[in-house]
Length: 151
Image (cartoon, rainbow, N blue to C red; front, top):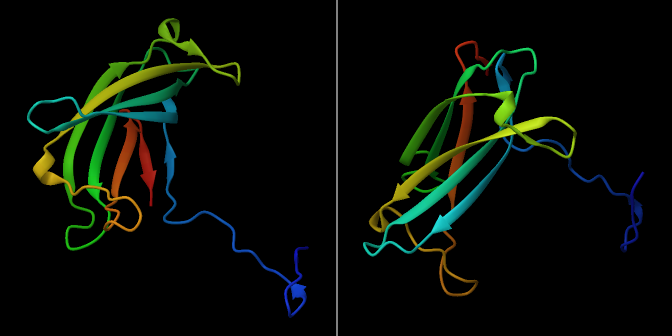
């Protein structure tokens, strides 16, 4: 058990657990095991391209199932909280033969999505002391024809 060595010694109970909502999702095709996001700010019109790579581990028992990866960029807080700025989806067959290896010994397939965000839609992130740090949420989901959600 943890203890606090401050002025009033005693047990220190540190909050732990999963922050936010939890959903149970089942999929016969595969599961989302990771993601990477890269930003490209080179467009001459001021837009930003988000390149999202969804890392999917196919279900070994499924025979080349078709899945859809969907990415949605949303406002995090304020009057527009939860409102979608931009979204993209890609549908692809999971082919065990085209998968790369993972550290766990299984295979993983990359599904690539690109979201183009107009500069006028977002507010800049300011360094500490220069303004507010505007946050945005990126929701990434993977579904197949047999996916069931339990909320």
